[in-house]
Length: 215
Image (cartoon, rainbow, N blue to C red; front, top):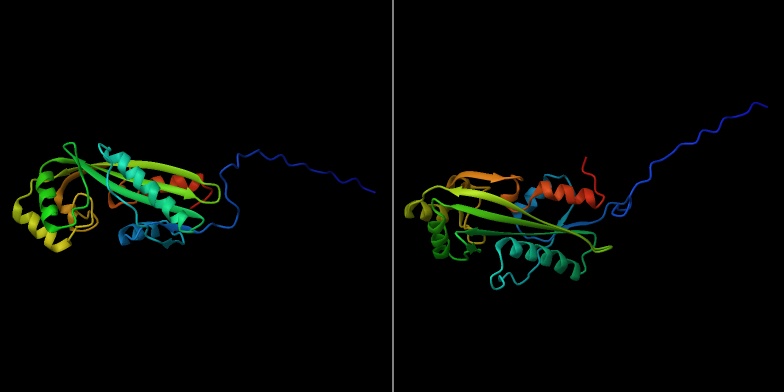
């Protein structure tokens, strides 16, 4: 009888601490924003959108970045508390100018006041994202900062813009994915998607850390 040679393969030991099972988890975007939903479709993932309702009032002397991170985290955990499992994406955005935190205006009058205040000035936007894996409470949290230089704006330009886009539910009173881009002289950020509200570069890294390979 001929002897058969047994070949032994050596495998490199991998750190599988944060690797998910082969079955992809459910992915939920804890947001009702159609713009963030459109952004997430860029990653070609199957997901559902489930907006959460939390108190978004800032704490006393709370920095804008800390506020955005706290709310992004709160939205993800609120979705988990509502019985949603798998991977949950929570996100929030705040803005600040001249030491003042700019929230969602809510009314056209407040939007006009915000844009007059930002006219010709630099505004810093903080786009926070939280990725929560409910199976083991593995959480990742990051805040991306974007610097926006506003053009000098007169009252007529501001009024026309608000009438056309009605950015009353947007921090800073603009929608950069629409006509709001015309309000700016320049945008500086490590993640060009962050200003819309969902930092996709940061999210891609988080998904990889959670065991989801996009490519």
